[in-house]
Image 1: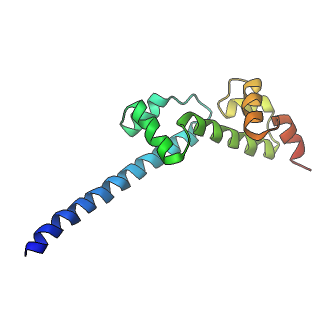
Image 2: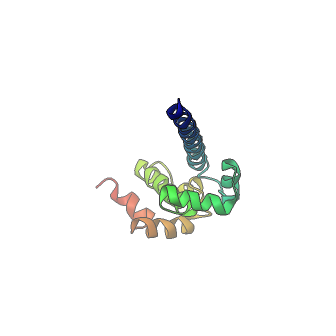
Image 3: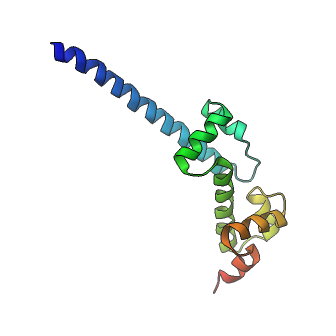
Length: 130
């Protein structure tokens, strides 16, 4: 009976911890989904933190701890990956792609794309068929 009294609270604590981790993982997945569906719009750290229900500072720390990069870097990375996909399709002008991935203009896209991939969007698009 003594053993049961010690084991039951431990089991209860473990269940709470697992439940809490699942909720956190679910909410974190919501954040990633939000980012992916809003790449064409400005994404504010304060909005992401609000969705997660914590302060922007704490959100930034948790995000970096989970993803290995800061939220801003992750958003930029996802925008450049989306730009690569769109450039490979060959259906859109680079200026249009810039707007589709949340860049202010083509030069803004070119600056970030070159930093991310090592080549300009035009060069990347020209090489897609080769």
